[in-house]
Amino acid sequence: MRAIILSGGLGMRLRPLTDDKPKVLIPVNGRPISEYQIEWLVKEGGVDAVTFACGYKWERLKEHFGKSFGGVPVDYSVESEPLGTGGGIKRALEGHESQETVVVTNGDIMTDLPLKRMVEEFQSAGGMPASMLVVPYRSRFGVVKIDKLKMVRDFDEKPAFPDVWINGGVYVLNGPKLAKSLPEKGDIERETFPKLVTHGELMSYPYYGEWNFVDSMKDLMELEASLKAPA
Image (tube, rainbow, N blue to C red):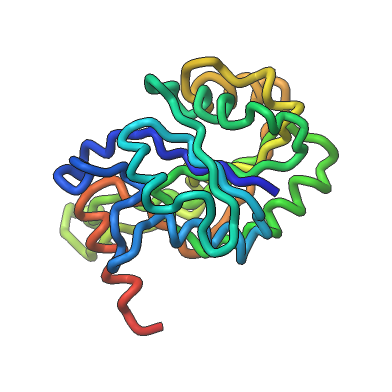
């Protein structure tokens, strides 16, 4: 089973770390985030080949990984101009459209999601085009709780809202069924998924476990601290 790691973003919020390399090479406790991702894809999902959908500073990716990592074949779908997530996936699927199960992950996600379970649930659904990981929304701000008299009664630092879900940035796709719905240029979240929803063809996989994304220096520091913390 092939995995596509979306790696085409400029990583503007992580400058200067991304001045000379793509976001997926940003070190997390001394190792590129993409190394963690590949190990997770193999261990938790049984992935046996990886494609980076890349563009910005992609040569650095090839210098780092070459043709394989940890025995897993690695190749590169290079965009001469930004194609968005949907266009990037479409190009990365070229030559692999017949694969009925493909895993896609954003390049800034770290999670302990049991990916095999998500894949198995998708496959047992009988030919759906796509499944999306969804995780509980967690506020980036602390919440102040007040009573009817407007007195402050409690504080909740970055609370989670278990009944409000967000896109977790990990997808399981059916290549033949989805390829025709992908744009040449544009985002899968805006161009493809709304169309699938209209036809009742987009599954979700809710997950309450560990999930992090690295979109800023603050995110990076918090992730590094959590990985160093004793279990």
